Length: 122
Image (cartoon, rainbow, N blue to C red; front, side, top):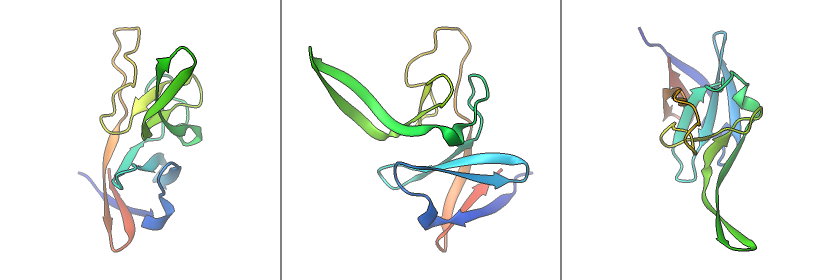
């Protein structure tokens, strides 16, 4: 049975930052994408269990020449603080396919905003 939890005020979740919240004994990490939508993910990295609340939100870089790079999808990639694994906050998939056959994916929870509050369903 799923339960909806009121975890914080909407204004506490800003674009480009991570907002860790406690839901029972579990940590859930909230992020707001540049488009304004919210994501709620498990606080543990699917690679080796690092605490994602200490990670960062970034984008993907692409080389556009010998000495130049450009940033794409800024604000949509979550980088783990431990090994630097990057995950797509839109799909949950790794930003780059892992070398092993093991599939790693962010664990998403349903998240909504109601009356300027963030509600997470677990």
